[in-house]
Length: 376
Image (tube, rainbow, N blue to C red; front, side, top):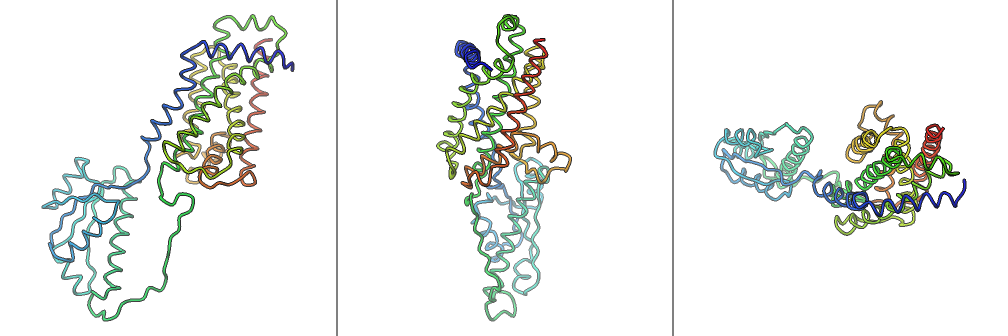
């Protein structure tokens, strides 16, 4: 491999990127747009649950229970004058949770009997409904224990001592904000999509424009073409990485606890592999349209759905988990979340970094080989 010829390919491709305003805007503006769009749109926090309460008892005990829900940030309380109003609210998608307190609630509490409260949930979104039910059950359970410990039920003259005092300490994301979890993974997904899409058009465009025949008549080798084109887009990709990280820290306020050097090194390895993958697709495809479609199918869907960005890989079927082991985005999502939130170093992340490096080398080899076959 001749460095002089590689530099010439790099300069040629970089000039083409700078002169093509649409490609430059796509390369620099689209990652920022996607990060802001998905960062604000994707919110996995289940709070401010629209809740409608039908209090048929209208007693001090029922009002005390309602106050427990009003004091929680997870519920937005409204009141209904009948049981049917709750059902109407659920049918019209205005209410997620309904709470019905029966007439004899206060008498059951005063008598030390088991007082029943009914929850009605909109199960259209089963995941959100199960989380809302868990919150509601926790409020009722805590309130019931408070009644027992205060000796308000029948026959309780002494306070009940708690045998176990459980104190929860949440590490790495103490406020449990979903954006702290989403944004680092979103950076990996966006870089994978943009990188593969940008380079997936480069060689296919050369064939359609007829300039590939001119390259074939020169002494330049396939490896020099692949490496030179990758380096041109790599320079643009480094700006995308810097912009994405700064937006994550200063716009979405994601804590950054790790090493900047480790982040830069692992991001460079991942970016190289993603760019080589796009060049490989461009060498395989016969047109820019096909190359674009292959780039979208092989980057967007797997990275978004199977990388662990939103859905945990451990909860996926075993066959799908095997597929995720071959996706570079899976490993880079793990690296970014660990660097941002946990602040761990290379001693914990070296297997993921090694996979990304191996992926980059293998894709470079296959892209060079495929281009060589086409040139032959």
